[in-house]
Length: 139
Image (cartoon, rainbow, N blue to C red; front, top):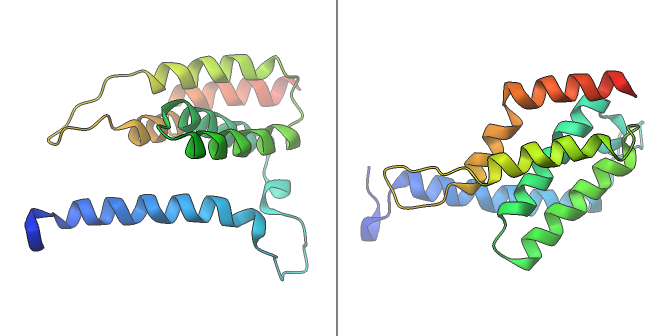
């Protein structure tokens, strides 16, 4: 399906998704939760979820083109690290895995680097799940 000026609906949906993800990531810390549990969502995450989110944030920081986006992803990683119970050395293996995914070469029907896709693939990878399981048990 094509919309005006050769822009595909798929491209518009992708742009909308990226805009929403970027805006919601920065807005999370500014939203006051009106629920009885006044803790932030990060405080309720399991150690496995914190580790996976940290790896995703690090990957996004590594593929970011703008300084602002890189700093935002690194700030998110710092927040996840702050709530983690693992020793700092545990994050070395996660960083190495994130780096491996960030430097992959992807191609598709449109010319793009697909950097966000690389990080999403990392997040859903068996490698990350296995590593996170091991690190969460080692604490």
